[in-house]
Length: 267
Image 1 (tube, rainbow, N blue to C red):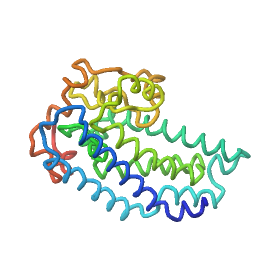
Image 2 (spheres, rainbow, N blue to C red):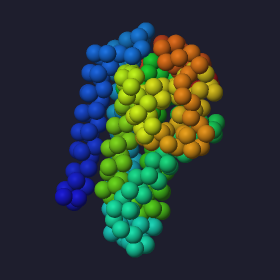
Image 3 (spheres, one colour):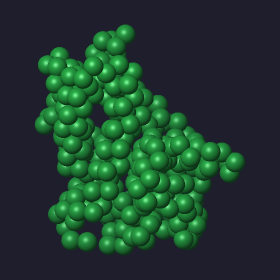
């Protein structure tokens, strides 16, 4: 079964991605949480275009999937969990937790280092906050993120199936917690106690920099609480807050060409 899943990893990842994207798009289309002033037609083709560029860049420059790389490391007996006599379930769970913590740390770093922020700010310069914001990342950031994850997988010796599961979860939660939806009031704090919810992550996309530099988690909400970067609500409230970056608020900045060149322009 594991071999079958690994052999079909790209199709599994794409299938899960497409299913969650469609589900969130329908959900927020039927019951949007915030009124949007920039139409989907103006934004979605460009945001989806970024995904195509990202996919081509990774495919051309790093043709091996992360799960495939983990399988290679396992075959060579390299990495912590491939050396130490650790039960498979412990290695699997431990890898998922460490990988999620690493994504949190990476996210913090991309805000803290000016040259990394120039890459990451494209994600924040979307003038609305919805499911396609969750896939709006500059290809240079994506490539760097893949290399960081490969390095961590090499050190950990993460089981290939854990890496595949993590990639599927990361893609799904990014789409979910960027969606323009609101969970029921009784359910939201329950989910937020474990997972990053749209209301929690929306704060991170505030135009107010102090709020932008909070709620860095993608999957587990634990890390923001542990490391003191958690903010419960934006000062202006969920419906009153403004998303985006002050320097990139012209509608023309939503175009694909402007997004791709943004890291090389001042702002």
